[in-house]
Image 1 (cartoon, rainbow, N blue to C red):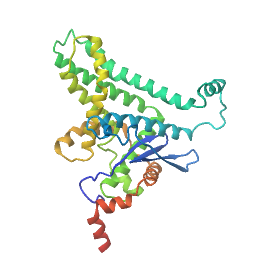
Image 2: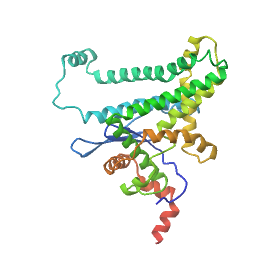
Image 3: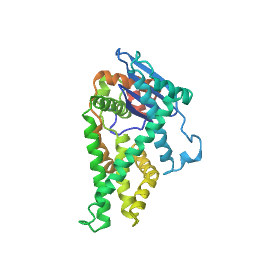
Image 4: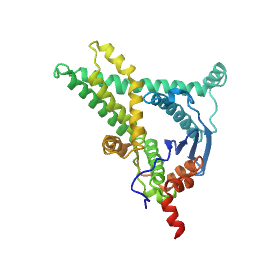
Length: 323
């Protein structure tokens, strides 16, 4: 049972990985994975941002750009770690693997990870930036208003995003990833509503959270609609380049919105958060108890949740002690 009706920000962020959950608090992060032998393996490490302790990470609308980059780097690192538990130990390196190691000085995996991120980012730009613009440009002969076309382009971007999510959900591994995603949210919600971190309490908590990455992407789409509504150029090529160039700006604004959403119960912010929460009905699924155990293990490896509850909900614990 929740202690309070309002959420208390706990400062934990997370991500679902292959058969596991990554949780981060300040500079510490933990990756907990359910291994093929069903044991839970937890690895703890530190991650310092690319511009940590600089003025850039303290300036609103600028810091979000670097937080986004840090999230990509740490997310890829956590995914690679979780995947390593499911690699075939009997698989022998191929001739190509040996040549790659020799050429890169044994840094083949790191370089491959960087290349994967670059390619993924390029595909994302093509799918969610260029394609919506191209489709909306085909409607020029039917829609003469540039303002209406800007809104249509945004709606097409949302539609493509939703189709993409639904399409990958058909994959078995993605379904399980969404279940672990749900367990991550449930753990954080359990704490932020004042409940002790037990499987039973976590199971009752909501799988939706306003600070989710899915909500961030929805904010990105909504912010892009507003910006492109007011910022316009006539040249088609410049329009595409402008959309790509404004990605850091859009990310910075979206970060401030989701950061505010995670710390505020303002009715306007609650209303703006609704589309992201609706999207999470697709990107999160109800986890089983074993998945919840993994998420709890990840939290406990880096976070003293008992101290947090005592500090944030002192009245409840005082009443409990008196009883």
